[in-house]
Amino acid sequence: MGRIKQGLNYLFTKPKIEEIEKIKLLLTVEEYNIFIDMDNYDKVHSMGVYQMVKNDDILNSDEKYLKLALLHDCGKEKIYLLTRIKKVLVGDEILDRHPKLGYGKLKEIDLKLADLILSHHRVDGDKKLKRFQEIDDES
Image 1 (cartoon, helix red, strand yellow):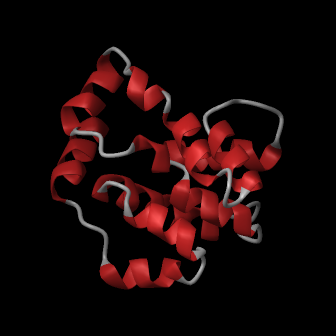
Image 2 (cartoon, helix red, strand yellow):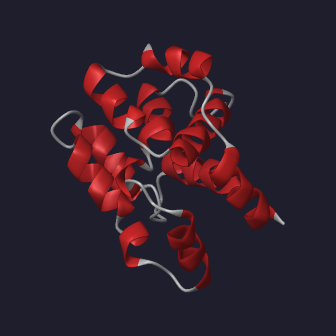
């Protein structure tokens, strides 16, 4: 049922302009341009992750994790619904590379943020990153 909801969200969800204006205050101009270039589905997903991070006692005071919430999927480019379905069913090489592609977009802007994007699907001992992964998986 959750996958059907994701498919419908992909087709019909658009980010709210007033929410985009709020996050514009957090991101640098370069980061904001990367965010704006993301697919609408990924923007909406990232804004949901951002709201959860803002409400999380472990992550809400760390600006890097607030930015990570908004930019963690920036490496997905413009991925069509069929590619996303393929990823769920059998995997997809392009989607699997999105952390590395996101790292490439941000490494010259903010290396620490780029490193977090590169690692956001890896399981390691970092308490904050582990909590971020749980939030990302929930949304």
